[in-house]
Length: 210
Image (tube, rainbow, N blue to C red; front, side):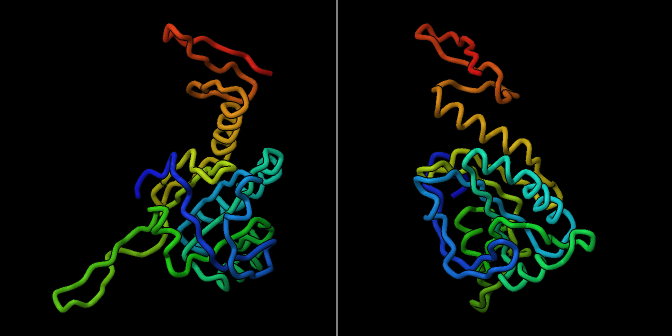
């Protein structure tokens, strides 16, 4: 699928851990359509090094997301039991205890595949046996989904490269500014700064909205 911007976000139903402790079945993004924006982010593995820094970084900004009507949801190809165990481990020991947003178990790897962030691939060998090439885990994909369920922004990092959570918030602000005012946001735009409006003559002018 590659670029999902402008398309409906692939839906799924999977097990997840909520509030750091409760395992639920059938977690879906359907519950947010018409109600909330969603930041859906993928990470490669539980019990690793860069991944917990990202999960804690999103948690530290969770109230800022919620104040913007945004739900944060994490996904990896680990099981819900693995997520639960990692969620019980203190941050000082490399765990993610304290994370309260949903952590989804993409055990069958179909969510990562449908969002086109699954590393590795399947193939058939000369004996028609199904094999895999590379490790079947998720890249660091991130998708900003609007209230109608459409992807408006996506970013995919290779596994060694952690993301900037403040940039995700900036993209939420830019999307909401555009929706509310119909204006476009130039490079490095920040909330509270002037945006741009295109005139009929094709010349961009600036608009300040406070």
